[in-house]
Length: 414
Image (cartoon, rainbow, N blue to C red; front, side, top):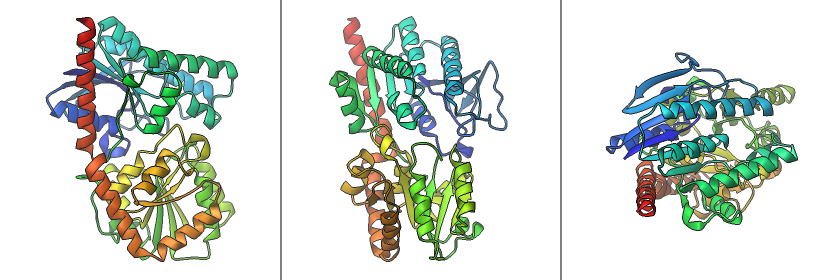
């Protein structure tokens, strides 16, 4: 197959853990497919172009067998509504022009968000008369409304119309959970158009390791009970609950909260820590990809948080890396959401509902006092990942979906 992928982020592996698109593209190429990607200069999550890259009109590089075409877009650290629209809009428009410079593919795969990129995917599929797959990783505009980013009723109506248009005009829709599938069915999207393709982790890269390691030593965490959050410090997280729990537990010097990441909440987090004199919270920037497995292993418990507003529209990818690391998950999420069910049904961690900071603090104390159960939950998570959410298994599922989509398209043309 000759496959073209449209994704706003295609990042250098050594500086980010957000590399699911890169892993998909490189594995498809290793399996004998011709793979191209149209993206922009890497800038997530700070909104600043990574060192060594430039926001040029058009540039091409080959990364591990994948032809990566980077187009210009408006890039800004601002998370304001109009700035984001301009950023997404300029990339989506230039991605269409960049796509026309790529050899005609057999199949096009388009990531959403951003939602306007779906229009690019649809237009290119019309120009080339090829099938296209819409990969939905967050449901928009619902997620933007939940975040408070999208407040205009007219804008909500427009983006709802746009989303429904794309759902009805895509050849196949790939979603990350059963909950996403239910949401689309409620929008009258035909069931046969929807395929569940979970996110994954690479169990050969994120492996079980010793807890007392170089990462702990470097950051003064030796002999501490480490509760770690690693990921984007954005609007979907329930980090307010985590910091309130840290405040409740500030008299326990043996417990250390470690927050690793970047995002729009970072300044607020640092202010909260300073105002409340929280010596039991350490904030670190994103770590190099090479250090990621050791960082995950340094935790006694890894946090995955999702607030009430976002619980139906998102599933944090980090949950699978935690499983791979053989560590238990402490979920802060509404009971009954996809994240909570994944953790509870497979006994790979515990879940506390949002806005229950006292219960969260008590749960952390409970986990600290029962190290045997932490070991068992970690083992359950690793076993689940190996059987269901490993990189090779999930990418095989993608290839089957692509073959099915191409076969269906051939029948329709015939």
